[in-house]
Image 1 (spheres, rainbow, N blue to C red):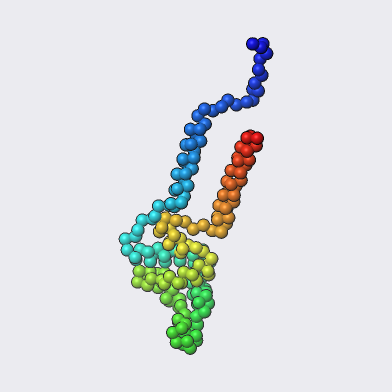
Image 2 (cartoon, rainbow, N blue to C red):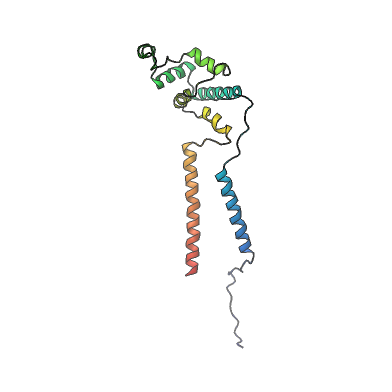
Length: 179
C-alpha cells in the first residue's frame, strides 16, 4: 500500500444523493403548472339575467368615454364617422345606410341600458374612438380571462425567450461536462 495521500480538491462538492428525487419533484410541478396554464383561469360566475350584462357593458363604455377625455357629442360624431353615417346618405340609400346615431340615443344606451341595450357593433367604434378596451373587459372577464395590451404581450414573449435561453445554457453546460 502506498503511503501517499490522495489530495481532494476542497472546493469540490459532494454528490447530493437526493438530487434525482428533487429533480423529479420539480419536473412534476412544472408539468402541473403547464397544465394549469393551458387550462386557463376558472370561468367567472354567470349573471342572473341579461339586464345585469347590459348594465356592466354600459358601465364599461362610460369608463372608456371618461378615460378618453372626449365628450359624448364627440363620441357620437366619432361613431357616425366610423360607420360613414349621415342623414343625407340614410335618405338617399334607403336601407343600405342606417340613420346616424344621436346624442339622445347614446344617452339612452348609457343611462337606461336595461331598456335600451347597446348594439354590439357599436363596441368596434367605441374601442377605436376611445382607444380603450374597457368595454371588451366586460366580455373577457366574464369568462375568467384578462386582456393583455401589446406591451404586456411583448413582455411575456421576452420572458419566454429568457426562459429558453436559460435552458439552452443549462444544456450547453451538461454537454461540456460530458466531453
